[in-house]
Length: 226
Length: 226
DNA sequence: CGGGGCCTTGATAACTTTCAAGTGGAGTGG
DNA sequence: CCACTCCACTTGAAAGTTATCAAGGCCCCG
Image 1 (tube, rainbow over the protein chains, first blue to last red):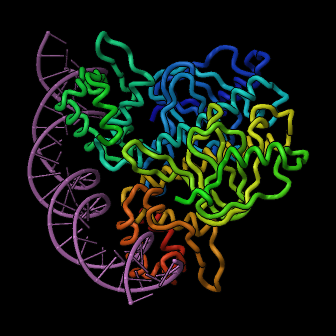
Image 2 (image 1 turned 180 degrees about the vertical axis):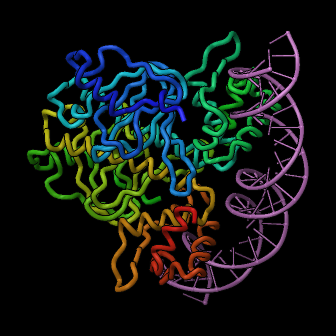
Image 3 (image 1 turned 120 degrees about the vertical axis):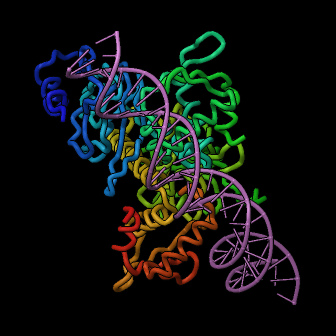
C-alpha cells in the first residue's frame, strides 16, 4: 500500500475547483504535477474535469470481471483524457511517468457559452479521440504478434521518437505487461517479439525500455503485414 | 459492379443540403432511405454530414494496406455515425440492411450557435461513441474465440433482441465474415464457435442469421470468461 | 437445372499461451 | 563496498487454440 502517495481525485478536484485561481478558460492556471502511480480518476467516477496532458504519460485501463485488464490507451503530451459518458469516467487513469496536467471543467462540454474556445477545443479532442481509438482497432485486429508489436512501435516512433543521428530513439514509458494488455497478448509474447525484431536488425535495445529503431521502413512494412 | 445502385455521397449531400426543405435543426425533415449495399461515405471523404440511423443497420469499416478489413462498428437505430476528424470521415460506411437515415450538417459540430440543441446532441453522441469503442476493445482483447463471440452476441442480444416468449430472438444483419472482421477472427472460427454454443444449448439457430438465445446467463458468463 | 455465394466441417500447420526456470539491474541493508 | 532481495524481463518446452487449406451442403436466383 502507498496510501500516502495515493492521489485522491476528489480532493484534487476540490483544490482545483474551489481554491485554485481561475482564468477565463476555467482551467488550471498552471499545470498540476502528478507522480508515477498516482490516479487521476477511476472508472465510473463522477466526472468533474477532463485532463490535458502537458508532459509525462498516463495509462487508461478497463478492468474485467475476471481480473484481466485491457489497456485502452496511453495519454501523451497534447492528449485529452477523461472525456465522460453519462457524466462518468469510463476508464481508470493513472500516471506511468511524472506528469504535468491541466484540468478543464466538464461543464464546458455541454455548455459552450461558458468558454467557447475551450468548448471547441474539447469537441475537437473528442472527435480526434474517436479516430485514434479506431486506429487502435487496426492494431488489435492484426493477426500476428509481430504485426501488432511493429504497429505499436511505429505509433510510438511517430509520437515520441527522438532523433539520434541516423536512427531514432524511443523511450518506452510502459512495461511489457502494459504493452501486452494494450495489444491483447501476453508479456512473454511481447518479449519474444521484441527479441525477434532485434534479431532482424530492425531494432536495437539499450535496455529493456530504451529502443533504438534501426530500420523504420522495415518496422512499418511489418506493421502493414508485409 | 453495381454502379446503378451505388449511392454517391456527394450527390446525396448536394440533394440534402441544397434542395431539401430545412427545419430548425438543419437536418433532414424526413429520413432518407438507403438500400443494402449502398455507401453513406468513404474513408477520407470530406465530411459535410453526420448521419443518425433511424432504422436498419450500417457497417463501419477500415481497409488495410494488405487488403484486409477491420469492421469498426455496426450502426443500429439511435446511433450517430460519420463523426469526422480533421473534417474528414475516418471509415467506410455502407448499409447491410435497408435503412432510414437522418443527415445533420457537420458545421453544427464546431458552431454551437447554429443549432444549440443539435450541437449538444452531437457532442453527447461523440462522447457515447468513445465509450462504445472502448467497450469494443474489451471484446477484441479477450483471448478465446468463444469469449469474443459470446460477448458479441450478448451485445446484440441487449441491442436488438426480440422477446420470443421465454427466449430471445436475435436476427443477425451481418454475415460470418463481418463478425469475424469485427472480432479479429476468421469466418471459419466464428462458424465453429457458433456451432459450439449450439451444442452447449446456449443458442439455437433457425437459419444461419436467426439466433434464438436459449440461455442468456450462460452467454454472459462465457463473455466474462467463466 | 445450373451457378454462385455463404455456411459448415475436417485435417493439418502455425502461432500463442502457459508453466517454469534463469538472468540482470536497482535498491536495501549489513 | 558488497551481498541480498525483488522485480521485470528473457528464454525454453509443452499444451492449447486458431488459421489455413480443402471439400461438401444448402439456398437463392437466373
